[in-house]
Picture 1 (tube, rainbow, N blue to C red):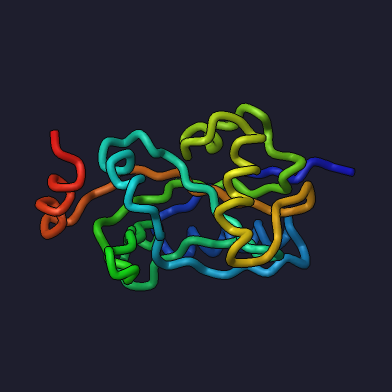
Picture 2: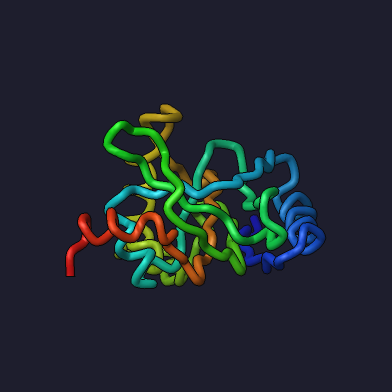
Amino acid sequence: MFIMFKEYQLGETLNDLNIARIQIKKDFEGTDIKSEDILRFKVDLLYDLVEGIHTWTVRYKPDVIRWPCNRHYSQRNLLPASVPGEDNELYEVGTVVLPKMVVGHVRDWPEDHEAIFGSGWHSKEHMIEGISNIYEPFYGKRLDNDSILGAYALKDFKLYESCKEGYEKLFPK
């Protein structure tokens, strides 16, 4: 069995992103690829995003590789970020650039990859347990060694001006 954990550069143009998508399709043949055009985060991660502490985000959906692509901006690897409000509706609060992503089977993820620690996990085991706990209620399935995880590097998070007052109330200095 060969190791299936790879990094892909995500450029700004649709062509750049399609090159990465085609390569992912070849590398993980038979796995569905679904585009993701907005990133959802828990409210408590907003401070870490604004401060540049949260530098990666791990994504999971059974038998699917999520692929980031914004169809609304000319810079295709610039995605809107949203958080749930008190009414559980999602609200866009800013944008973030995704310069690269990694994809791999759980068994092949390196123990010390920057995506693990940059997304707030203390170890690979902590990440597996946490991701399982987050997604099991939605998909009825916990991660196993054959599950495929994707992770996006996060760069240049920009909080919308209209959200700054609410942010300062949530995270006073």
